[in-house]
Image (tube, rainbow, N blue to C red):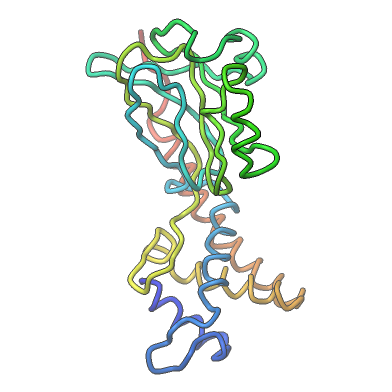
Length: 243
């Protein structure tokens, strides 16, 4: 089902016709908020096959960071050329900064070996002028001055000596449903669970604890089953590679 179909069914089942403009075209008047809120709730509820995503970014020589949206948790980081693929070792940001304590432009380039999740937020937010007063003393290429809220990132060292493709594995939110034709894993494969989650969020907003708990119990039954399927897939025929 796409967003329009989900929204239509949500209105019919909830009886909240005030959340659409009319019942001819079911144009959104607030329903999308609860649908997307429910979808984010489902994303956080358990780890399922579509919870994991992979982000790819080509980085030229000397560029030692990437940023990406809607990431809940960074799990792995790889660097690739046409000849090899390297899994970078995660280390604490403070250790990374202590070891590579020169400005990034002064660090000798090489094959990337280490990464750390980036801290993109700068205080005060959006205050670029104050940061730029320290030109030459600090690196600020890996912070975001505007609209950083939906972004995560990784920093890796040493800075690459050639062009690499950086691949980040992580847990990512489902794409926001905004256009009527938009679809997601939940809307296409498990639309009934997405409808339950939207109903759950609606009850929470109106402080109906009993109603919210009833929906939560139903959602947990469904998601627990999906989680068991994921575990079965994960353990099937797995031992270890011989080498």
